[in-house]
Amino acid sequence: MRTILLTALFLASATGLFAQNADQGPTVQPSPGFQTTERRGPMPELNLTEDQKAKLKEIREAGKDSLQSAIEQVRTAQEALRSALLANPENTADIQTKATTLGNAESALTVQRALQQAKINEVLTPAQRTILDTSRKERQQRGRRGPRNQEQVPNQE
Image (cartoon, rainbow, N blue to C red; front, side):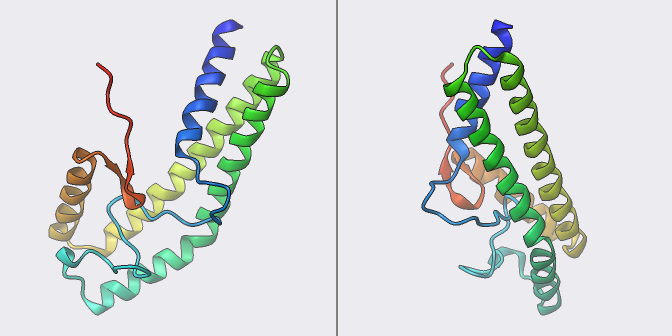
């Protein structure tokens, strides 16, 4: 039981690192390596055709509501787990249930993002997918996570 409590506490503290500030409205986070046209447009290195740009915009718009819903479910589950840990830390059954709910919500969000990325990959040529993947890996090596450019916690080895 103590292991479950420690695991739940770790999950709650770790998920807080990735939560947005309360003053920010819900936003859809594009799949890593893809920038929306709202700021700078798709990566210039991809040399997208107008048809590809239109298809990518359509994909983002079609998935926007489901991604926002999945993100909100993760936030709600994170808050429920945090509250349970603070209010009644000895109730391990409740904490385990809330931690499982959070895990399920995060899994659903990951699936939504992966499906959207798969649709995006269908639009791109093999060369463009390679460029996108290389760019994503370079960003991760520089210590940034996706489009929000949040610094990763350095390895403490």
